[in-house]
Image (cartoon, rainbow, N blue to C red; front, top):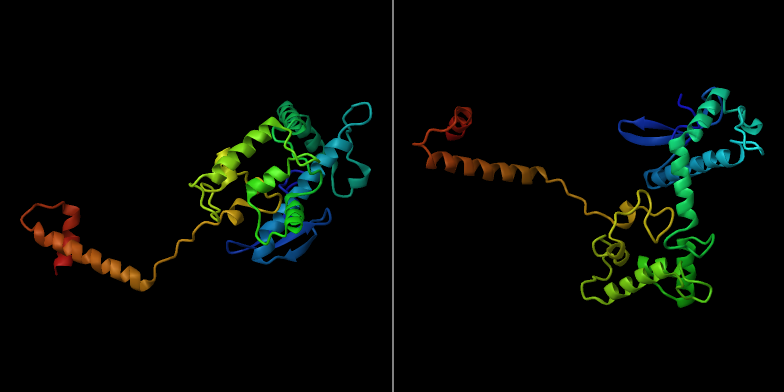
Length: 269
């Protein structure tokens, strides 16, 4: 069994064929699990939440239990979690978190998070609640564009954009919005206003300006390719056969490759 600390998150995927049918959450050291059967509509969301909680738990261990007050690494797992974190697992966890490569990446991420280029100013209010509040105040009956939410999440208490980087993005959004090239109501990434301004791929698992729970796949729906029917396949085969027969009759006097001769003879018959 993979270590609880190093798996992507503390779940076991039960497969029927190639489809995920349930999720098991580990509850004890003997491998016992509580299994929850998920429907297709909620499966992806539940797995994302489980992964987010598990990553948060590992960060919690690093922040509060990895080292003591003097800054020394704790050799023993926290007593509160000893019932499912063994000494070997804790040692491996400490070793990974103490690795210079991991420390450098963690430091760079903390510095970037502490000084963001486009700071979010709505504290713990997410994009979903922000949109609800704006639509309630303005009595809007349609979802707001990403560029509108992105801007409103970055204004100060007076409703003013006071960050130069944010101001540049807002000005570009306004320019594109006024342009005749914008097709209203089209969510495709190449036509989305905010997508045009940043001109970079969306993050995996989330959409810029929409918050947690919204994914690129759900927000930018792709046209599904319909499989041809049996009648359509047979019709295409008939047309192809006629074209091959015409080609054979047109080139009777020409020497054709040996590998094509059996097929051509069959078609001619």
